[in-house]
Length: 138
Ligand SMILES: Nc1ncnc2c1ncn2[C@@H]1O[C@H](COP(=O)(O)OP(=O)(O)OP(=O)(O)O)[C@@H](O)[C@H]1O
Ligand SMILES: [Mg+2]
Image 1 (cartoon, rainbow, N blue to C red):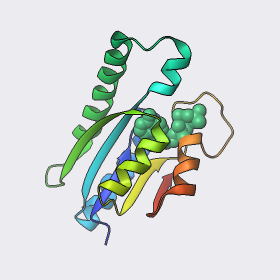
Image 2: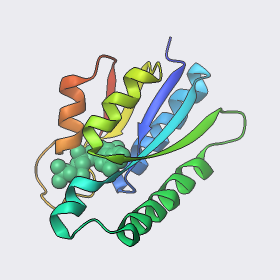
Image 3: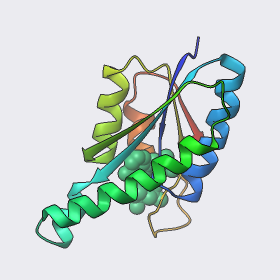
Image 4: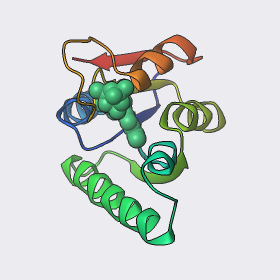
């Protein structure tokens, strides 16, 4: 049974569609929704030296994204928000295996600027490496 669902969110349209789909699934399965935002320090480290101010700004942006997802969930559905730092694909996989996740629901694409490709690097990695079922929302 799908009782514990992980929804990785990055604030993109694709991730919003995944949240909507996850809510519908949680209603049917009476599952808990776990929203996870990963502050991508790899990308930041390339752009600038990793200062506390930058990290704080990214974490704040993540909290806005998580709050928005949490507010979409109707009362009666169990939900929790998590914020982590690191490489999104790796952190999402680690989270799934250490938190007894039955199903991952995510967007096919995110905030990346390259269009016309079905999967982004994060969704591709998760589909290939996850030990549990993955629902990729288009
Ligand atoms: N930093 C993140 N934290 C949590 N979930 C994420 C993060 N980045 C992506 N995701 C999840 O992965 C889905 C696909 O995004 P992905 O990053 O693979 O595509 P992209 O941004 O279009 O491509 P790329 O990042 O490779 O340029 C998103 O809809 C979201 O569900
Ligand atoms: Mg991305």
